[in-house]
Structure formats: structure tokens, C-alpha cells
Image 1 (cartoon, rainbow, N blue to C red):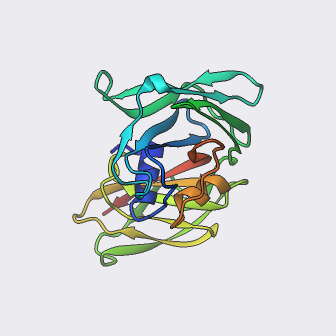
Image 2: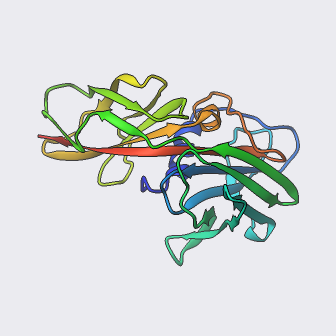
Length: 246
């Protein structure tokens, strides 16, 4: 799974162990949209929960795109529609939608539209650019064999408007089950997974999450902020470091 598919990845990680229930009726739509400041394509997912009394990660399926009409309202008032995304290009539709616009740092956006007859709305403000002060260099070289299973790496990062930071470790831009976690502090250390072989390279991708994203993604009972349906309309900014184990 590519790290570029950020909302799907974040939600999959965050919901893997949660048990949020949204009511007795069925079926119920779930909308998840996480704006990434600086990115030129914003992604949302829209799905049915097959049983509304089951955990939100369980037995989900896409809603027919003819029942989904979503738009992103830009700071100046213009709107950009979310249109179906097929993965891979020309392949299957899996309930993901894209809005072709570059999200600005520290700007307010709105989500409007209808899903299966449910009118919805939400608003968020994106965090400022994420500054990673430590590790300071774009590439961090670590000694292979210097630690066992996991390695403590100091960090210092900050983004105005962020309340929590998620870090994800992958390889060649693909998440493959390396270390990940959340921290609220801007200074400290994180545990990264030690690779299985020497001369390996992994990615460290850090996301600065504003309050709505943090409340939904890093919670045993995710808190939605979309009026009309359950789900997330949140925002983040992103930074990256390359880790070389030698």
C-alpha cells in the first residue's frame, strides 16, 4: 500500500483495533476525508457499514457513486467536486473519491454534499507546514545491529495548528508493517523498527494532525465531526525523512 494513499492508510491503521458503534439502524454510510496540506489531490472514502451495530472497520463496502455527491469548498468560496477514483487506473472502484485542488497551509475548508440522501457538512482548518528539526538532515544514517528489534530515534518537530503527530515507517514509499505510532509532544524519541537485513533503507513519514483528525484517528472511540453522517473531515501536514541502515 502506497504511503501516498494517506487517508486509506491512516484510517486502516487507526481503526484496526477500535470498536466504535454508530447506532442500531442499517445500513449506515461512513465518510472519511483527510486533507493533506501541500498535496494537489485530496482523497475521501465513502462506504456502507453492512451492519450499523458492528465496529466501523468491519465488513465495509463502497456506496454506489451515483448516491454520492460531495464537494470541497475552498477558502475563497469556490467549490471542487469529489469524483470517483479507480485503482489502479482503469481498475476497480473501491469507494474512493478525489478532489483536484492543492490544500493550503493554515486555511479553512468546508465539506458539503449528500450521501445516499443524507445531507452533510463539516469544516476544518489545516495545520501549518510541518517543520522537522530533528532528524535535521533529509537522510539519517543508522548503524545496523546497534539495537535489537526497535531503535529509539530522537525527534523534534512542530506545526502550528497540530495537536498530535503520527509517524509511519515504510520501505520505498510503501507501508510494509514497520513501526508507527502517535505522539502529542513535539520533542522526544520514537521507536522505529529495526530492519531484517543490513544495507536497508526505510522511510519515516510524519503527519501533523489537527484536533478533528486526532480525535477520530487516535481514539478507542473515534469522534466524528461531520453533520448528517458519521465520519471524519480532518486535515494534516506532512514531512519525511529517509533512514539508511548500514
